[in-house]
Every structure is written in C-alpha cells, then in structure tokens.
Length: 184
Length: 184
Image (tube, rainbow over all chains, first blue to last red; front, top):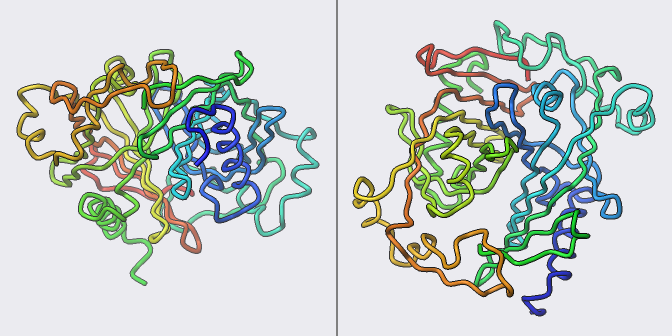
C-alpha cells in the first residue's frame, strides 16, 4: 500500500472513484444520494444519477425533472451534499456543493444528447409528487421544457476510508484543495 | 405479482425490507444514509448502521459517538431523513423522522449489549472531525460516556419502486399510515 499520509494520493483516489460513476453504470458513484434542505428547513435525501464530474472545474452534474421536489428546495436553498458509499474502495465520499439550476436554451445541447428512452424521466402529468387515485394514474411526457441540469460546484470534499485504521480527510476549494487529515 | 394498487401490501414491503436491515448485515437497509441539517442550515449526509426498527412504535434506532458532527446538528435541528436504496426490491425508502438523543444512565443497558469489538466506535481523542497532523494521529477510546442512542420517530414514509411502470406512495403517522399514491 502507498503512504497512508499522502493527502494528494487520497484526493486522487476520491476523484478516480467519482469519475468512474460517470463512465460505468455499475460503479458506486453512478448513484449518489443527493441531500438538500426543504423549504421548511427539513433534511431530504434521494438517489440521483451522476451525469458528469469535472475535476478542473470542480463540478458535478445532475439532471432532474424541473417539477420535482428537489427543485422547490433548491430554488430556496441552492446547496446540496452528495454522498457516495463505495464498497469496493471502502470509501465514503461527501461533496458539499452550491447548486446552479439551468433550463431552457442553455441546456438544449444537453437535451439533444439525452437518449430517447431516457427522456420520459422529464415531465409528468400530474407533476411529480402530486396525489393520484391509483398507482399508475400518471403519464410521463418526455418534455424538453421539464429538463433541468444542476451544476453543483464543489466547495468541500470529505473522504473517509474504512481501512485499518480508518482515515479521513477534508479538502476545501478555498485552500486550493490542499487538504488536511481529521479524526474519523 | 400482487395488486399494484394495494397500499397496505406496499407498506408491508417497505417494513419487511427495513426490518431486514436490523437482522441481516448484508441487507441494503443495514446502512441507511442519514441526512440532517447543519447549524449553518446546510444539508449533510453520512452512512449509519440501522440498530433497530419497530413498526408498532414507528421508530428506528441509530448509535453514534456523542462527539460526532451529526450530534451538533441534531442538538439544534432534531430531525433526520433516512434514505435506503434497496437494489433487490428496486425500492427507495425515505423515512422522515424526529430524533431524540439518549445518553448516560438511560442507555446503560444498550451499552452492555454492544460487542467489545464494536465499542471503539464510541469516543476518540481528539474528537471526531478534529484536525490532525497525520492520518492515524488519533486514539479510539471505547467510552460509554461517548455512546449515544438516537431514537428516530417516523412521521412519514415514502416508498418509490422502480417497477415498470414506477410506483410511489406516501404514508403519514398523522393519518394512521393509511397512505396514498403520488406521481413518481
């Protein structure tokens, strides 16, 4: 094993596991849990799909239905923490992010790249979360107007590895991702 | 398959999958993501271990180090959402809960049941999250005084099953868990 005190290598590992989620449907990072704060100030979490991860820009990208509950939360409190538990690497990844919502003309090119079969995730009648009389009493619409791209700018990355002994570090944008060890 | 409109059966499925997490270390519900709101109003999420689930009392139980970050958050905002993605059942379980922190004499019996090898999860020097110079520059203390039991009283259960077509329902304590379908 490499030097357990090598912070740069630890951060590299985090980005490797994260990036894998974009390319590999079976990677743990493919499906982060996306935690937000509701308009009532309550914690919320749901599974999302990781669409892009850019280390240079320090961003990750998520696509969502603009009628979804998380959009209501993000309009008031535009921050999210993404959580990944990567069993193979015994690694918990937590990304603290600021979220920018993009819709309409600015994401037309992204929409063009969404496969036909995946488009039905965007737009539903009634809207997601609406009460309905029967389980299947809704229609998926495949609407470009309901397609939203969330650009999540990473402010902080926390990594915790359940190696023996455990190790845990925090890397912050404001200090150039230099990082520091913290007690697990 | 049974009637897709059977709300009671859907809730039964949710509780079956949840309860399994207590008994079976390999069950998805063994390791929920525990989402809270920080003292700064920011979303936070981390993996926890499900220690108990009681349908009659509508509670789930989590154990934690009383020096952990989540304790600071919970003292100010004593609510949590537990998130589980159960791949085998294609089921997302979200529990909206109010959290009661128990420590000291009231949890002495719980501490007595914590296996020797698991006790080192409670108490660390310095405290969890403290900056340290090297990855392993900390000691685990196995301290009963650092053992906290979080009793999470469930206010709402949301289930989303990625069957074809998807189905999603919300069950609330205030309406006697009767439940209702909502748009996925």
